[in-house]
Amino acid sequence: MKDKEELINEIRELKRRSKTVILAHNYQRDEVQEIADYTGDSLGLSRTATEMDTDTIIFCGVYFMAETAYILNPHKKILIPEPRAGCPLADMITIDQLLKLKSEHLKVPVVCYVNSTAEIKAESDICCTSSNAVSVVNSLDEGEIIFIPDKNLGSYVESKTSKKMILWPGYCPTHQDITADQIRALKKEYPDAVFIAHPECETDVLDLADEITSTSGMYKFAKKTSSNTIIIGSEIGMRYRLEKENPDKLILFPSKGTICPNMKLTTLEKVYRSLNEEVYEVSIDEGIRARAESAVRKMINIS
Ligand code: 13P
Image (cartoon, rainbow, N blue to C red):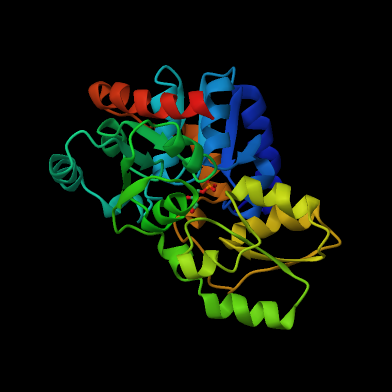
């Protein structure tokens, strides 16, 4: 069994020789973030995937993220080291449920959070991420919007726009576990702390936030805030870069259990295997991919 340093060196060497780029989401394990060429939020990763001058991309994240990279780059080889890394939120709406919802609200546009399957994206008018959801919804002329599948992000967007949102009751189990009581207790203990929340948190948690933003938005806010104590309402993978970039600040999480188990399925060993054996290749039926691409590109073009 190779030790961690050996594995990191071999991954770097293989990556260089095969001209492969490794993209990793901000929730990945520390050591996976360390070997990545680019780490980011969903929007940043989607954009970067289109800008990479390489034939092969290894995507360390959950499946819908690798799928989005493929949707935008069907001629590139998109590999995911752990294809079982799913997203429970993405699985909370099925295509039949979406078709039924659309038939009940004819002519109402569908805005779909990127945390969704390719099939759901293909049936949507436009996608959004946590960093551009408000601008995406505001870009539409209609006053009524179907927003799927995250009810928390949807109601946050509704509070920031004049639109009437038809919400779907999906949620991210990891963010849903963060409670307002946990945040109030931390704020009591650290009265000078600022609280940055991800918009996947519930409304009563968001009501306590000094800033509501995507994972990459959190890095920016953490750097610029004058407060030395920062409470993060998101997944603990955020700690790695936040502590590296803000060595003098105290970074707190509501609980040790704020973990996305799917994001943690990707390990250095699996990244090594992915590079070495070119597994696991992401592929989507072309009819679905092309329609999903239209929804994703519309989003990229407005943000
Ligand atoms: P970001 O786009 O903010 O990184 O969010 C992705 C996600 O799935 C959060 O749970």
